[in-house]
Amino acid sequence: MEKLVITVSPNGGLITKEDTPYVPITTEEIAEEVRLSCEAGAAIVHLHVRGEDGSGTGDLNVFKEAVSKIKERCDILIGLTTASKLNAPDEERLSVCDLSPQLASLNMGSLNFGEVAFMNSPDYLRAAGKKMQECKVKPELEVFDLGMIENAKKLIAEGLISAPYHFQLIVGAPGGAPATPKALLSMIDHLPEGSTWGVIALQNQLLMHTIAIGLGGHTRVGMEECIEIRPGELAKSNADFIKRLVMIAKELGREVATPEEAEEIFSLPSRRFTSVK
Ligand code: ZN
Image (cartoon, rainbow, N blue to C red; front, side, top):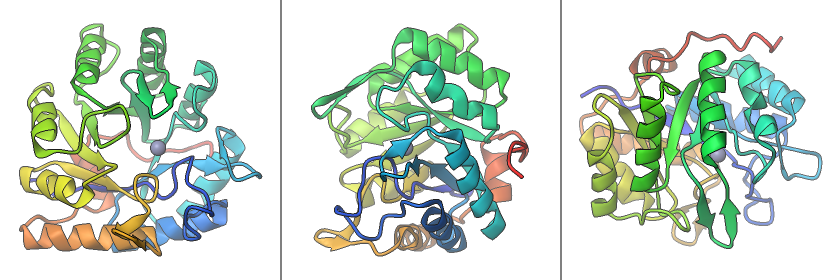
């Protein structure tokens, strides 16, 4: 089985210091958490940044500052979010591709995320696919249900997403597929042949990730998805989640990939991020 690629999602755009004092908000705090996560075994960071008021921002200067501070500390691969602010204009969302990260998230459809509609229109999907091809950024195809996998297949057929494909299967999100083995296995069954895939679990995380590790998938973990390491116990660092996954992988006989190995496993463009420094 190929090595396990662990992605850390240290903060997302919504978790606040009121939710947990341990969530990194400033670029300094983010970079430090990423360093600890990388040391623990994370090969990729899925990055969100925050503005001065602490809320999610798509400001490219803040992204650059965070990436620069991360790169001073460790060798982790960089993936940027295209969902810094819910339902920001399409062009603003896709402008992170101009920074030439190795990966960027591409949400493959719309859903009712609790009480909020998270919009990803057909026009947006096509624009995103095209932009990521132009910028040579690998899309992380984030799917919240089976229908979104079908949306991805449609874009693939239109030539707007290039092989090899990498899917992030998201379970347990409000309005998305439930975090059950049956739902997860069904999503895996419907992926285009030869795809790599990872699991993002907002609920039932330990079981979902253990299934992913056992079946040859990959994992993303961090305070964006979950702030508690165990029910009622806040994680003090994102590295705590990574350490636990590394331990499970070891017990299941699966080695953990370094950033170099992750680059090869996901067929990523070589490290550039030329806009920084
Ligand atoms: Zn995110």
